Image 1 (cartoon, rainbow, N blue to C red):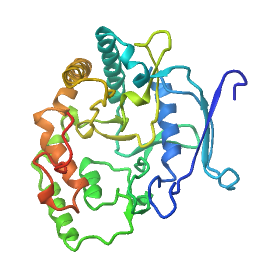
Image 2 (cartoon, rainbow, N blue to C red):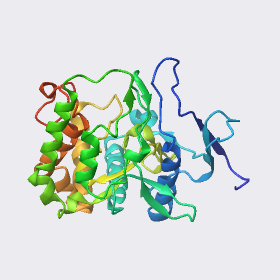
Image 3 (cartoon, helix red, strand yellow):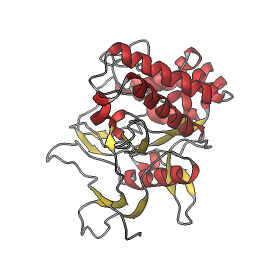
Amino acid sequence: MPRMGKKLVRVESIFSKEEGSGTGLASPSKMPSEIATMRYLKRHSTIPVPEIYGYDNDADRRVGGTWMVMEYVEGRNVDQVWHTLTTTQREQLALSLADLWSQLILQTFDRIGSLYEDPEGQFVVGPMTFLPTRNHYAIAPPENAKCGPFNTALEWLEASARQDLAYRLSLSPQSEAPSRIDTVLKLIRDSDDLRLSTEWAASRFSIEHVDYSTHNVLVSSVSPTEIVAVLDWEGARVVPMWAMNPAFRWPHDSDENETRHLRALMRDRIGSRVPSWTSAIGEECRPLRVLYMKATLSDRNPDLINANGYPLAMSHDF
């Protein structure tokens, strides 16, 4: 480990952070996968991520949680500097963010899951990992053995519909849940769109940062449009491009018209770099995105899900 320079030590418990609550519960594979993803990107892209110097799974329980030592990156959170930026600077930053996302989705893999590093230092796609849950009733993370890796989108959607990828809850499932799940499984297996999509470029398996937003981006203190780090790769996964949702959550002081304009800039820039992205977020792949959301919510009351496959309380971000 380099002796010079600042380091950051991050300690995480995989257990709930609130007594009697599932909030904060996480999978033991979360941090190893996060580290592997960052190391992969360090080696295979120019996306700025902190250097990882060490990791320990705390098998002896002497620390109280898994921990890693990583590079401390000097910079300021985009949310902190947003109010100081001109319109032109905000547009420049949006284009830089789009270029980083383009690099991310150009990384291609042959299976669906999350990245890990094997003992020889090679990167492999293994079981999918997830963000810590915010569900008060969670009692256990998804079983690793049921989380992939998956060879096809069909296998992945079936696992999602069976709720294999969901945190286990203390609540008893609703009596209608099994029949609802069976209905969604049939939709998945009978889907012509899913069958035909295997040949589409928009179905390529790529890395997704599941919380790609301004609060996870650091910019230079002296050059506020220069991105110096993309943070928080926990829960990163490899999925079909059409299943990704990079809708950026801009700082709260962005007005609606500005946000719409910046999203359009990002969308067009990514589409110019990766033409299949336009198809992935367009009408051609909408049935696949709806199918994915229905799989994720397969045990819910279908009357509470809108035409896009989202709960009525949620909005579509594309």
